[in-house]
Length: 223
Image (cartoon, rainbow, N blue to C red; front, side, top):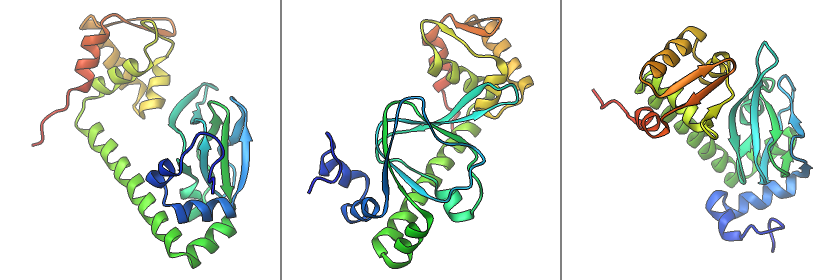
């Protein structure tokens, strides 16, 4: 049986989602396709479906008060999303946008609830998936607590650095990192004083990528 058309092997699927779960999700879901740049769902949507990415890359973004967009997260093949609205009934908090051509399967709330109520494999997978997501979130929180705000700003610049210049405003960094603008401005000043960056109107130029990356990666020891 070919579970997913294309270049995905059954072994790859088994590593990500147990085969019985995968087949049940595909049987219950509807396959959809989105072109690069197309909106998959919008913040504020009331939609309790569960979605599994079959192919391509999905970007999750937030639009700030100035109409500027910031990428909050991204996910590729076998990534699921929609668990929080499914469990709580709350609306979507981020836009989901197709970064590339995307294929996904969307399982409506009623069908997903039926699967969880009547299929032990689905229920156990859902719980494990949520546990892994929580663990990743806690790891990111731990990392954030063990690094300074200046290091986080430096890492964001390293991640976005293209040809030495980053087209970002301090407000973009503040939204991306969930910091105040004052905190971001102070961090940029520190990095500028170290000689690793230069700032201009709407742009930040990385002058020493290697030193900035080394500084941003350093983790304070426990205790």
